[in-house]
Length: 482
Image (cartoon, rainbow, N blue to C red):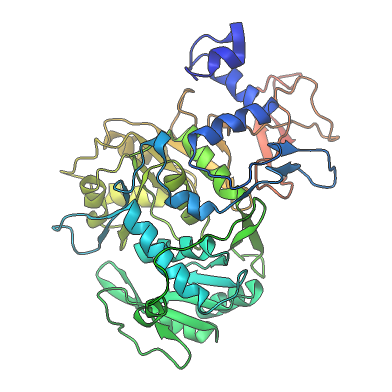
């Protein structure tokens, strides 16, 4: 705002806070200008530059075509040093800790080490699969899971995300619907000091080839069935190949990740992510959570849910460090990791906060390095949010609401707006709402036009209740469709 506000808003610009509403409207009405600014902030490297930001000439494509003509590999963008972010090969890419090792130092992986391991996995994948093959990941969000995720995309394959909580039938359904050729998984899941079987569920759910990673140590706690292989044997396939790897470059709208709806109303519905989606979610995190280079960002989640990919791309495209806890986020061990990893941006869901508060799990811990808190997934409890904020010397909590098909939020908290616990500030940057009456006609005094976010491929009807809305004639509460 300080750098761009005066030249974009002219004489109407006053300061970042009082002029933020004008800047948001500018982002909606001037997509070309806004996204050029955003791309300068993110580590996005185009092998071929886009012809334009948004081409809306083809009316058959709802929302238009974003970055037409652009060619890139978004996983490569996550792995490169980036001078404008002061990101070098020696910068920390990932920090993590295994549950039960709270008295040990935090583990660290540099950007160079991450890139090397990703290229090794990509080389091994090339010996087994064809470009474009769909390869599933069904395991906790560990360092190895992140390495496999980036390697699949770097190599021109497609990730199929499956949550590690699913039963065998649900795993099988998603493997079948996505036409996945193989699946990466773990022998067990370690949570709360207990071992829960995972590979056995995968075996029951699918006959596809499984690559099995040990939850702890170097040796598997299970015997792979015929046709499956251990993580160690898989990595050995890269032996003798070049230590470097040439990324597969594709168009901006190339498929990289298949996610799913919850499946609560029948068959799980496939939700495709293209290379556009990481740019959108990283931009939202930059704009709304103020995620900066060298921040340490922690959000307990899973690659089977949308927050897993969002977390990976938001961190690496913004030059931040990804923090991972290999274990349950419900215990004091997780809360101590927040302190020891010097987390500066912490995401959660309200049920997690309720658990931390009930057990007083942050007592005696130092969470003052946290600058920003975020929450999504459930309705927040104001008292719980007040308690959470108090643990960080009353840092703001940003509410986020979006969807897997959006690759982002459409309504969020905004740090330059007044912020109440459990409430949203307004539409996310570059996203506008049009308010319709009961006949489907826009109110003449609508403040925003509808602009579909990058990656948004379908129209969604949302019911809003507008209390004393200035757009209604009588000021009464009316239900409106957006």
